Amino acid sequence: MELTEYMTESKSQTVADHHRRRTFLAATGAVGAGTLSGCLGRFNHLGTGSVSVGYALPFEGTYGTLGESIVNGFELRVEQLGGLGGREVEFHRESTGADPEQGVVGTRRLLADADVDFVIGPVSSAVAAEMAPVIDEVGSAIWLNPNATNDRLVKNCMTKYHFRTCGSIWHYSAAMGPWAYQNIGGRAVITYADYAAGQQYVENFVSEYRSVGGTVVDQLPVPLGTDDFSPALSRLAEIDADAIYTFFAGGDAINYIKQLHEAGVTERMRQLGAGFLVSADTLPAQGEAALGTISILNYTPWKQNQRNREFVASYHDRYDTLPNTYACDGFDCATVVDQALDAADMNTDALIGAIEGMRVDSPRGFLELDANTHDAIQNMDIREVVRGPEGNPINEVIDTLERQQVPWECNL
Image (cartoon, rainbow, N blue to C red; front, side, top):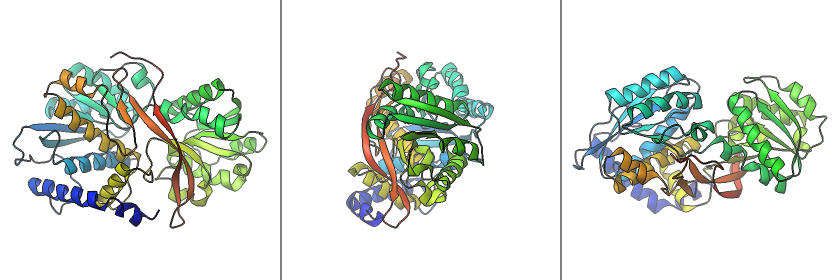
C-alpha cells in the first residue's frame, strides 16, 4: 500500500487530530514552532490543575535519535488530547546519554528540583538499573519506561513505581523460539553481539526453541562493534541448519546483514532475529541485502489496523517521517498517563492502582500493563523484509503472536 493510500484511509481522523493539535498549540503559544521541547508553558485555557512530566532520556550521542523519537510520540499524543487527563502539562528534560551516573543525576534533578509527577525514560537498561533506587527512595513519581528492556529490571522487582510499555528482552527473543521451530525448521545456529543484552536475547531464544524440540547446532558470539564478520561467516558456511537467529543492532546490524548477503549464506538458511536487526534506522543502509530477513518486534508502521493508520498519518503530518517503535512506546506512555489521571486523583498509590492491569488502545494492537509485574502484555509482530510500494525494503507483518506475557511473577 502506498503511504498516500495508507494515510487517506484515516483522513477524517487525521483532520480531527490536526484540528485538536492546532487548538493545543494555539493555547500554548506554540503554533508554527517546531517540536515542543524543554519546559512547556502552562495551558491556562484548561483551568483544571496541572501535571509535570520529566524526560530522563538521551538527547545526544548514539541514542539521541531514540530519545527524540520517544518525545515525539509522547508529545504528539498530548497534542491530540489537548493535555493529559484534562490537565495542563509541563515538560522537563534531563539528558541521560547512555551513562548510568548521568541518569542518576538527571533523575534526582527531575524529582527534587522539578518535582515531576511522571518520569519517562530511559533508553539504556544500564541507566534504568541505576535510576530505580533513586525513584524508589523518593517515592513521589510514576516511572514509565519506554525502551530499557533488560529482563532483570522486572525479574528483580525493582520498584512498584516502575511500569514498562516496551516489554522485556523476553518478548523479542523467547517468543520467537516456538514460531521458528514450527515455521522454519528444527535446526538453528546463533550469531550475536557478545555483551550482556546479546547474551540475554540468546539465552531466551535458545531455551524456548529447545523446549519445543529444536536443536541449536552452534553459537557464534561476536565482539560488540565488529566491522569484519568473516570468521563467523566462515563457520556459517560449514553449518547445516534451517535458520540463523541473531541479535545485532545499529552499525553491527548493517555490517552483518550486508556481509551475510555477500557470502550467500541466506540462500540456504533463513535469517531470523530481534526486530532491531532490520529496523527503520538500519534498513536504508542494508538495502536489498535485508530482503527475506524475518524479525520480531512490538510495532511496525505498516501494520494494518485502524488505530495504527491514524497514528502513522498523524505522526507523518507532524514530523514528516514514519513513526518507529520508540515513537509508538512514547505515544503509549502518554496514553497511560492520560487514562491514569482520568481514573485516579493525583496520589501516587492511587495512580499505581489505576495503571495496574490497564489496557491501552495502542497502534501496535493489544497492550496491557500487567498488575503483577508492571511489564507489558502485548502482541508481537513477526515481520519479513519485502520490497515496498516504491521498491525500497520495508517490514511486512506476516504473523502476530498475541498477548505475549513474561513467565515470571513479581507481586510488587
